[in-house]
Length: 372
Ligand SMILES: Cc1cc2nc3c(=O)[nH]c(=O)nc-3n(C[C@H](O)[C@H](O)[C@H](O)COP(=O)(O)OP(=O)(O)OC[C@H]3O[C@@H](n4cnc5c(N)ncnc54)[C@H](O)[C@@H]3O)c2cc1C
Image (cartoon, rainbow, N blue to C red; front, side):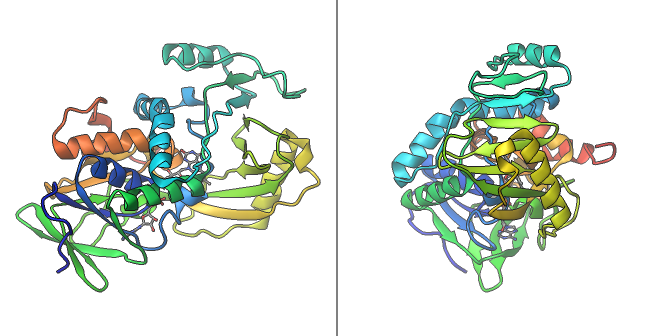
C-alpha cells in the first residue's frame, strides 16, 4: 500500500478527479496545511472543466434557486482574489476578464432587475453603446460578470497544486475503496492501493456511477453540451452575449465560443452536424460577422448534471471520512471557490459561511429529475 508523503503535516487526503472541483478542493486543503494526492482517471482537467465556456455567472441568474445563487454569488465575489493567488503561485495567466454579460430578449426585465437589486448584482435595462444590437429588445446588461479561459485556469490550478506540494497521478482511475467501521482506509486503483486519512469524491458526471464499496452520489447524470469555436480579429466582440439559450463568449485574442446544447445522451461525447449548423446559424444571427466563417473547432463535454443545478457538497452517508464535491452542472467553474471553501470547512469542522443544508446528500436524494 502506498503511504502518503511528508510526515508531520496535517491529515492526508486523496481526491478523486482532477477537474476544477477536485483541483479547487486540493488547493484549499493545501492552503490549510493538509497533504493532498489527486487521482485522475484521464488527463488533468480533460473533461467538463476543459470543455466549458468559463462564464463566471449563471446565465439569467434570476432564473435559479437560491442555493445556486448563494454559491455562485459568493464565488463571484471571491474570484478575482482566488485567481490572483493561483496566478501568483503558478506564474500562469488564467485570462480572467471582467467583460460583462449582455442578455437580450429577457422575458420579464422588471423582475430580473428586482432580483439583481435584491442580490446586489449590478444591472441595467440597457445595452452598452459599443454594441449594435438593433432588433434585440429587452436587454439586461450585467457589467460585473467576468469570464475565464477554462484550459488556462485548469493549467494554472494544476501548477499551483503541484507547487504547493500536492501530488497528481494521471491515467489513474480509482476503482473502489477499502472500508471498515464507517471509515475508508484506502483507495484502490488498477495497480495499487493509496492510503489516506480522508477521501474527496470530485468525479464530475461519473460521480453518479459509484465505485466498488462506495455508493454513487444521488441524481447526478451526464448532460452533454456541444460548443463551437470561431476565430475573429481581436476586439470584434468584447462582452458575453446571451439570447434565448445561446451564448457567445469572446476571448481577448479574437476567439469566440458559441454554445451550447443540453443533451441527456449518457456518456456519449460525440458531436453532430445538425447541431453544428443550428449553433452556427443562431450565433450568426446574434453576431453577423460569424455568418461567413467556419468554426475552427466543435466539441462536446459532459456536465455533472443535477436537479435544479444544485451540487452535492457533503460528507458521504456511509463513511465518516469521505466527502463529496460534485453535481455543479452548468456552473462548476463559477462555483469552484465557494464550493471548495464549504467542503473544506465541513471536513475541518469549521462553521461554514453558507448554510450547507441545500447541498447535503439527503437533500440531493429528495430532489429528482422528475419535472425538471
Ligand atoms: C459546453 C459546456 C459549457 C459550460 N460552460 C460553463 C460556463 O460558462 N461557466 C461555468 O461555470 N460552467 C460551465 N460549464 C460547467 C462546468 O464546466 C462544470 O460544471 C465543471 O467543469 C465541473 O467540474 P468537475 O471537476 O466537477 O467535473 P470534470 O471537469 O468533469 O472533472 C471530473 C474528473 O473526474 C475524473 N474521474 C471520473 N471518474 C474517475 C475515477 N473513477 N477516478 C479518477 N478520476 C475520475 C474525470 O476524468 C474528470 O477529469 C460548462 C460545461 C460544458 C460541458
